[in-house]
Image 1 (cartoon, rainbow, N blue to C red):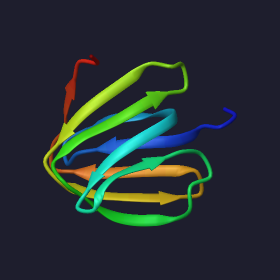
Image 2: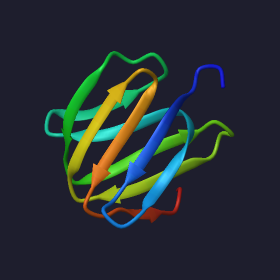
Image 3: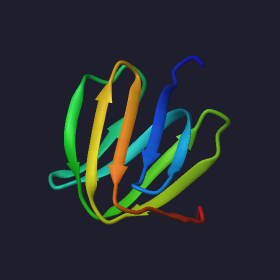
Length: 90
């Protein structure tokens, strides 16, 4: 799992994503934040938009979220939101 981190996207009803990722882009009030392995600890509000993820196997996954919160710590990213809808990669 070199250059990867644990990524978890959760709603109140289910865990939408729980696996290793190489990259994640999160929409915030100040613009998008890109996350790579060994990112500094951070807690931020997530705004409506697309969470884009590149998984360990190279797949891209995209989720539309209305809002939420994201925590980055110890090579682990957790995104909590009311709901999330997976979109097709372009």
